Every structure is written in C-alpha cells, then in structure tokens.
Image 1: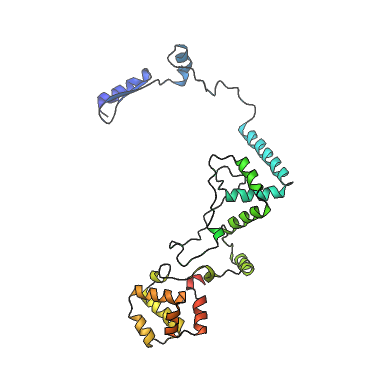
Image 2: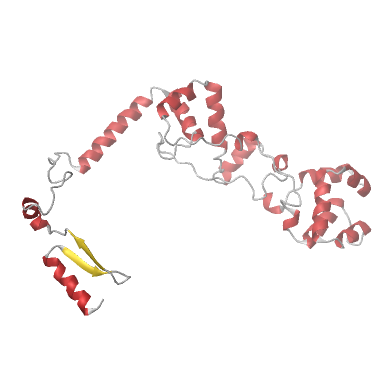
Length: 276
C-alpha cells in the first residue's frame, strides 16, 4: 500500500468509511462502519437502521444453555424409555434407516460405513448374491419420512426382515479373530462359490513366472515336462488366457491336458495365498 493509500485508510475510522485501492487500481469504499458504543446515537440520527433481529432486544431466557442441554437429554430419554414398549417398531425403524439412506434425518444415532465388497474389475468372474448388489438405499432427500415409514411397515414382516438382513450383511466386517471364526463356522463362506480367477481379475495382474509355477502345480508337472516348457514360452497374455480357460473348465482343454478328477478338484478349490 502506498503512503497516500495508507493515509486514506487511517482517515476512514473517523467517518465510518474505509477507502481503499483495489487490485485494479480503482478507489473503492466500504461504508456504514459504526462502533458498538456509537450504535444507539447512529440509529437515533438516522445514519443506521435499527436491526430487526437484534439479540439485544430479545428477552433473556432464564434457561441457560447447559440446562437446555440437560432438558433435551431428559426429553430424549423419555422417548427411548417409551420405545422399549414397541420392539417391533424399533426393528422396523432400523431396517427402514438402513434401506432408505437416512444419513441426515436418521432416527437412530448409528452410522454405516463403506465396507467394500466389489473389486475394481467388476463382475468379471465375480457373482455376489443379488441382495448385496441390487436395490441400493433410496434417495430420501426432501421426502416425507413419516409417510414413507408407514408405507414401509405396510409391506409386512417378511419384507422388513429381508431388508434388515441384506443391509446388515453388507455391513459385515467380522470383528476379531475369535468372533470371525465363530461367524465363519456358522455361515461357512466359500470364496470360490462367488469368485473364479480370470485373466482380467487375477492372472493378468500377476507375473509370467507365477503363472508358470501355478500351471505346473495344478497339473502336477515337472519343470521339464513338455506341457510345462511349452507353457513357459507363451507370452504373459497367452498364459493368462490359458489359465482362465483351465479354471473355466474348458472341455477341449481339459481333455487335451488329460486333467484327472483329483486335479479338477484341486483347480475347483484353489485360491491365491492372500485369500486363504
């Protein structure tokens, strides 16, 4: 700021105006600056309009903010106390919250998080139960939630339970090792039930030597076997395609390789070490 501009800036405080030079060199002003001590006099003189929303004009509440918070907690506790009388409503309401994407006006103080279950390669060799991928939570912005919840309950117990189950399943993380072991014992997850390695989702993302080792392992081949050495000579993309066909159960390839029942069983359950 030049000395001339700085002088203009200092002079402004006596008149309630700031005069300044903006970035383009133009002189600008900001008016109506009144000290709090001079506010009443300025209003009386007509220089400043009286505020229609002044907190100073409102009667001070005898309820302090801390007391207001406590009273709010009591009111909330009364609602929770009463809600225990209707467990079905609570369960229905939780199912409704999960299935209707109530992030802002949520009835429960519970939040969901992103629990990823969809690989970057999409549905290639991957087929989850449709309940985990279809009918995502609804967009409820601007909707009448009371009317919507009544309609939701009218769909019946089976529908509500189904919604609750599928959205809880989508939130499953597992817990600690002991809890995860208990859950897995009860549910018996099978990765190969939903996932088959393909060129896109696995083989094309590992190195050629890894694929050669896997080819020999699955087919019980020694390093110098012609079926192993011919595979070694293939390009990476060709190796990935060959392994995909093997895992897909290509009939002609299986016959040409002479795959035994034991080898077929090994292929059917094989998993990368990071998934075991």
